[in-house]
Amino acid sequence: MIDGLVVPAEIEDVIRRFDESQAAFNQYDVEAALRKAREALKELDEAQQLGVWAERLAFGLSADQSTQSPWKTYFGPIGSGVSPDGKTVYFPDIADTPPAVVLHWAERARSTTHPVLQSRYADLAWDMASLIGKMRRDPEMARIAIDAYLIAVAPEFMPERHHQFEATLRAFDLSGLINDADRRDLAKRTLMDLHRIAVKDKQGHWWHAFERLMLDKNSGVTDEEKQELVNDFEALLSYYSDATAPDHFNPHFTREIANYLIKHYARHNRPDDVKRLHEVVARTFEHFASLGDAMHASFMLQTAVDSYRNAGKSEESSRARILMQKKIGEARSEMVPIEGQMEIAKDDVEKFVAAVVVDDLGRTFAKIATEFLPQRSDLEKRVKASLEHAPLMAHIKQTILADDHVAAVVGSVGEDPIGRLFKK
Image 1 (cartoon, rainbow, N blue to C red):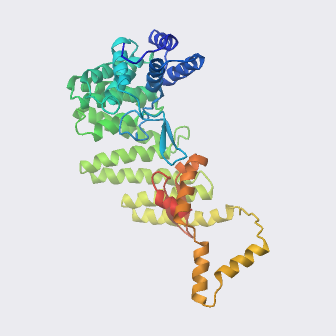
Image 2: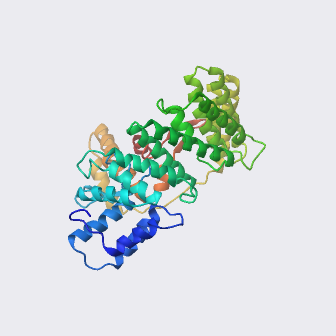
Image 3: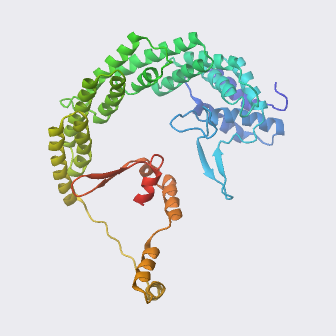
């Protein structure tokens, strides 16, 4: 029992049921059950409110590493917003959470037995020790989390491959943070086992082990394991680049796999392999371009042009460029104009003319330019607003075509905010 923190019986019952559960579940299942239990509760005193918050915060925080936590922690909010006074707020927000919550998580880590719960509580107690708890991290919490994560990856606890890799990678990282060689080696072996399954069934997630073990100098990966990873990626490259097998032909996977291998071969001074991989990508995307319309082909052929050049195949690159120019020309005939009509009152036109037309011709043109040139602050607001109103488009790269080539590629709002600013 932590002073000042009391978990209501209804909330305690939720945790108990999950701790005794024989069925697979994840943090979202626990959070949903906690939310439902909280809605049924009536008035709570301050200690009970804190107890509810401690449990809901534990399963409301996200461990999604595709976005960086604003608190520089492993766990972070699932979203954010801006308050009326202009301050950034997070959902959930750890602001004003007292140290008692971290002590409660540590107590839960020692008392729960289900590996999904135990790993969550222990990792939170480790991760948030200094930020919320104002205390030094306890290596015991890291050890409990590692051991629980590596048990939790069993299919009966975690059937989803994504969650299995996520848990194993976290165990691998935690063991490195506390310099526990035995646990790091166990996590590495678990990661390799998951990798072998992923490569065999070809359902995705085959990149995790290669990315972490081959690119981390301190991963402890053996020469035999390195060669196994390289061989697996070469086999996957052949599988996804096979243009005669439309059921699994995948140029995007081909390029991704090739990029990993290119980095590996470049570090080991194997230029012939680097060129070979660039040529595989070029031929894969050239074939992909032949499967769609002219607009689709013009985008794909730019990758072929660049990859042939990187492979040292200048003639092939020129040939692909000529084909791309032809497809860009054809694409223009496929485009359909989008038209709209806007009515402007005569009085507004007269006011505008009176404001910009002066005796000096140069000043008149300057005023016209000023009137029609948008303010940077307005453009920045529009770019930011696209994340909320058109999130999918905000995260997709945009290609700008010139007369006979791809003039520019504008990244997502997060990757290329300046490019999006000019695009607006």
